[in-house]
Length: 158
Image (cartoon, rainbow, N blue to C red; front, top):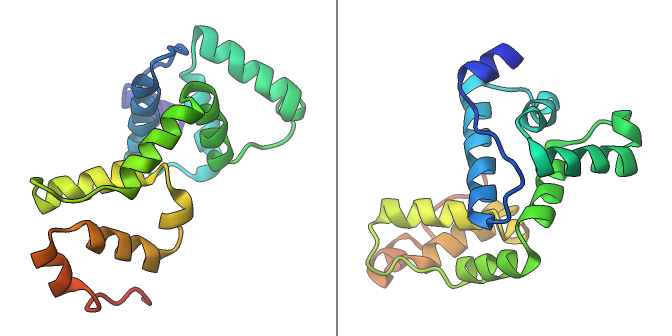
């Protein structure tokens, strides 16, 4: 799996303090995982292979202090939570979550709105974890002429 991962030329992350760079690294890494159909249990190993400098020092410290020097497996969701807590400040995460909560289609096309919705929804997992609430939030953000036509017509039970 490591060779397949490396062939995709994954980005390195050095621990820059720019939250946009951090989120971009995470998004690109997850995109590669989808492309190579990476098993979840291998994601942390592959992603942390791409950490350098300050980021590598941080991860080594996390493994040592929170995961018995790597003896305990780290789930991908836990890695993402720790990574975001370290490199994307709570203030920035709160601001992005608020942007998600108030997101509307406005002048965007439906495709642009859907892409922005998906990007921002990562910061509001408590809303998007429930498919019904996620769909409702999406529809409520559409232009009224679209939203009212869709409301109640989408089955989220399947």
